Image (cartoon, rainbow, N blue to C red):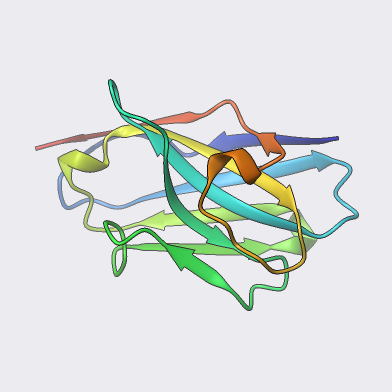
Length: 125
């Protein structure tokens, strides 16, 4: 089992930056792909970004390309999501998720095995 805990959410203004962290604990001796998803009120959960264990592969939703950057520090069992130039439409609960895989970054939530509790990000315009 792997436990994921997100942190770093908050209330910011449009154009500001925010960095989310996802700390993993438990069975972290295996290779995991980690993804960030988000869910806005009344909308379905959507893929935001993902990164492979080796950091050789990243993937982003079109809506965040060029603004968000995903990275990871395996020594700290932590994945980060740097969010720049935030927009009001980025307002959502952001979830960290992990799946047992060496390299394939998938965008479907059903393919992920473990989930964090979520972190609220609110962007005021």
